Image (cartoon, rainbow, N blue to C red; front, side, top):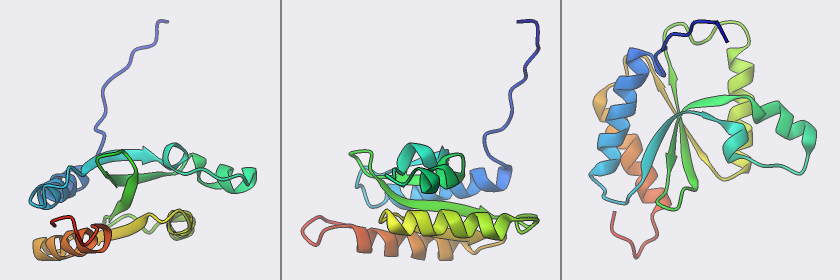
Length: 136
């Protein structure tokens, strides 16, 4: 192969800031949850309906929060200033519905969100997804 390649950013600077903020927000709860970037929905969703699976297979979420056992807990999407162009709203609706049907939460943060908004949403997620007998 003679083609040249170059490295590309996995996330935009804004997505990276959100990624690290989500990591910090989860770390304070010490549950062992992790954050993954640019996750293909075909890797974390399954369906016996081939057409439904094909509709989400190549779509990605900006971030995915997973439990210690690797099971998905929540998708995190960053909606930057240029996000809602073309068919973005329709693509997001498909992702949101597929995740909901799989029991995976969907968190959305817009450009310019306040840090306390993120903290509040992460804390709420932990309360919803942590068994009562497990410390949050």
